[in-house]
Length: 230
Image 1 (cartoon, one colour):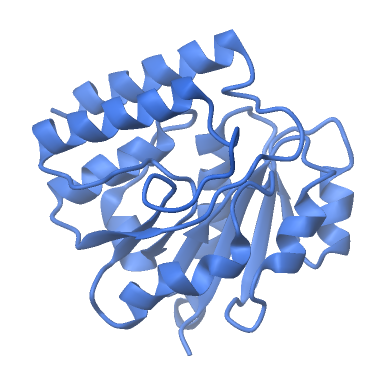
Image 2: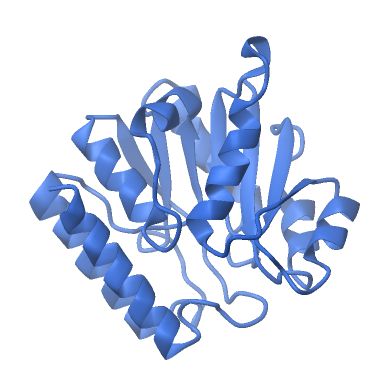
């Protein structure tokens, strides 16, 4: 059985993180790492009670949190290095029980990275705002035209072989994280695919799409990242 670790960035997700942890297929996963990204609520307490390893990353930023989780995974002894790392959000918008769908292409040797596509799957009404849908459409079309990458979504729910993640050399610390991984995978010819996943309204208010500032900031950073690596 491969070593599969899960990384969940979390900022003020005390209402949702327990539900997320309870729905992860525990028989598949060695360790679930919740990275508390400077929360002001009880996210870390709830996550610990739910059986997760909790790390603290005081620097705000989705990428900072993911990088902290990766550092934990890659700090293990050589014999205990993860084979696959899964990323998902802590707001209960993803369906953690669908993790086997993302792992299957990797376990069959058909892909090294699998993106859970909300565009191909079923979305609850209101789960993605119009600006998110347009932003995903624009970003994935730019990835196709500029990098030859066949993606339909920048979905946060994703699985990647740890060796491929090392090869990519992730750097982004904020909103450009997901698109950086996908465009670098395309440039490096890392075998990638998508699987349809369901998506629902998150618990609580989005820190990105829930505000004009967050939406504009994320959009700018995603576009900047896309053109940065040309």
